[in-house]
Length: 216
Image (cartoon, rainbow, N blue to C red; front, top):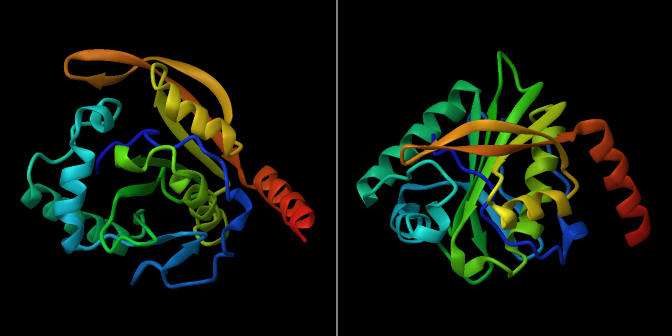
């Protein structure tokens, strides 16, 4: 697993424009989610070159665990995501904005413990797509999938304290800052403090309902 943290756009336009999640046999195949101008789908081997080009840059990789260093490494990672999804413990969505045919980023969700009752999510998006609204459009659809389909009760995220963009993005979509985990993230021989963020399913559903009422 690539330990992704919040590397994303902080533009929140289009927040309420995501589509509802439908029931699916996600262990056999992830559903395709359409959120505004972004498609979220199973990551494919053909995504390896674009992911390698976009997620290994200095700016994007600064706050995540080291991504694969080659296209072949990303291909092995993608194959691993399929095995883990089939096992029922993990999912990985490719982020494909309208006008693109390959992934420009990833959302990952993994269960903490023996079920998805409590889960952790992470994300990484190519720098060229920061500030475009891609994250703000896609993230609520991923949270909806986690809560409605995976039956996540508590969704956690961890982001380096220094990662102002990522922490801001999490706050703007409604995550609650709970704590600072001291020296919790090792990067290139140095331990960094991390912010622990959470989204509770009951609170998310209330907020979602209120947004839908305002939209309609």
